[in-house]
Amino acid sequence: MGKKKWREIDAVITDKFGLDDEALAATLTANREADLPSIDVSPPQGRLLELLVRLSGARRVLEFGTLGGYSTIWLARGLPAGGSVVSLEFVPLHAEVARKNLARAGLGDRVDVRVGRALDLLPPLEAEAGAPFDFVFLDADKGNNSVYVDWAVRLGRRGTAIVIDNVIYDGLVDREGASVPADGKTLLDRLGADPRLSTTAIQTVGSKGHDGFVLAVVN
Ligand code: SAH
Ligand code: DHB
Ligand code: MG
Image 1 (cartoon, rainbow, N blue to C red):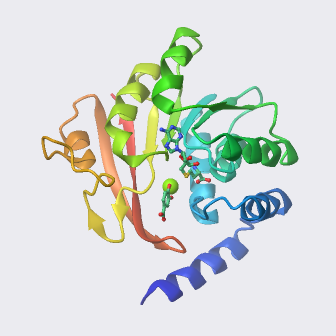
Image 2 (cartoon, helix red, strand yellow):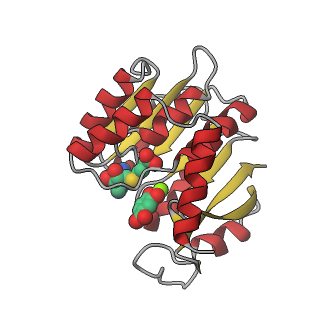
Image 3 (cartoon, protein in one colour):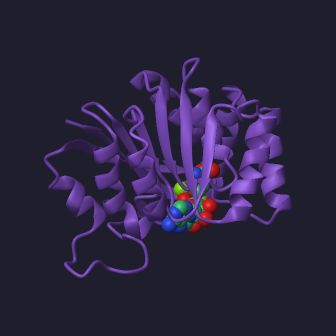
């Protein structure tokens, strides 16, 4: 059973559970028209994010890597009234497209898209001393994920959930972006040795190929 079958089954799941609608479809169209890469989460993965946000009871969500805001829409839909998302995006065009997509989806007032390198945006975010983030989604530059996990713990609280996209690349375990860290330790090595977290990784197949995500909770 190969990639074609995985894609077909994702389409069936998307259909059966109503995982596409006008706002989501318009977002993917706008992204394509603006030449953004098609690397958004899939509809079933998006619904999983929505459900995880709901299950965790999160009111404040932090996202690394907005792109066109497709995953952001799903995250925001999992929030209760009064909840909010801060989403960090390096490329101004991506943020601009995302803001329009989020406004069209009726979520403009609950999502704050901030433009810059995540590492530059985090200290000012911390200085605002807002409520802790209850849920963090890492989906930006993969090589910084270990540092982003430290920030997620710092800006979170006991019980904060951390989801990391794309931890399995085409069936390869432990490839942390293009560069191998100097000490040879990959993201999964670090997470496995991190007493601050209870962690697992789940492999996935679907329209995005063979991939996987990490789910961790702060102890
Ligand atoms: N979460 C999106 C996909 C994100 S793609 C979705 O599923 O719909 C990864 C995004 O991270 C890209 O838009 C890229 O520009 C952004 N990015 C890359 N490096 C970054 C950095 N250092 N800080 C913030 N965003 C970054
Ligand atoms: C790819 C997929 C992603 O979900 C992502 O965040 C970055 C890249 C990819 O398939 O290349
Ligand atoms: Mg991703």
